[in-house]
Amino acid sequence: MQEFIVSTLEDENDGDHNAGDLSLREAIALANENEGEDSITFDSSLSGGSIGLTQSEPTPRGGEFNQDLEITDSLNIVGLGAQNLTIDGLSRGNGIFEITGENTNVNLEGLTIANGSDARFFFNDAGVGGAIKFSGDNLTVKDSLITNSFADIGGAISSSGHVNINGSTISNNSGPGISDPSGAIDASSLDVTNSTISDNRDRGILAGTLNITNSTVSDNNTNNTSNGSSGFATEILTKGGTANVTSSIVTGNSQDQNSGDKFTDLGGEFISGGNNLIAESD
Image 1 (cartoon, one colour):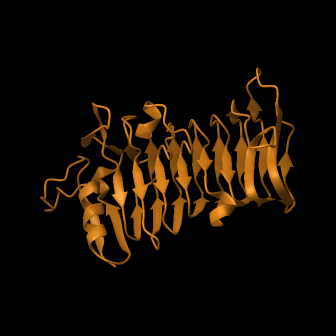
Image 2: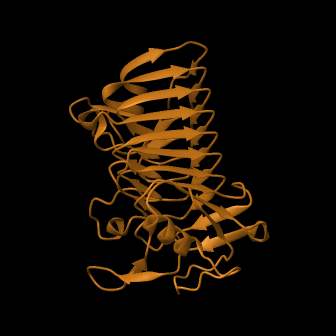
């Protein structure tokens, strides 16, 4: 394992990797080139800072959007704490992280990931993963905040692999806060532990097999009531899988008043592990 230490808040890729001039984008590129799992950390002098993604590329229909951060190999990115370091997509389209690779395992820890938006959202196409698009093996988001991001599918995260959310908050995202579009078809799964999913618009969680433990899912709103043939708008929806909920709170969620369908907090097969508070939704 090789460790790369980010030492500048600038979003650059100028080939200068000397001390004091290694950007996050450059560190990810170096890690991608180095086969096997690597680690990226941040110099303590960057505490309190924000890395805004300013590198651009042309859109298919003219104009520009930001280049996302593309990860193609297993990688640990360990920040300085969610309150101390932000990765900012600047709401310029194309998301923040795009993670690919059949056997890719990625850990994102100690970060605020904010203002992501999939470029296709701007063109009324089916955009996915406002902050994170994941098609690897395992993704872990630990001790982090994902906020103010949007896409048509998965305002915060869109994944076809296994996702672990641990000690994190996912809030104020548009589109489902966490979306797994493949669901049971690809046996995708989601584990949420010691986390909060709140104040998202268009559902909190849409997933295949789902485990929620010691967590809170609250104050999310949906205005999309088309869930296949079910006729339900749901806060937590499993697609062909099972929702296992233990020692958790699911409450305060709502749907738009002009919707005529029934709203439920949980959709799909539900198994309670006990010690839950699941309140009637608005």
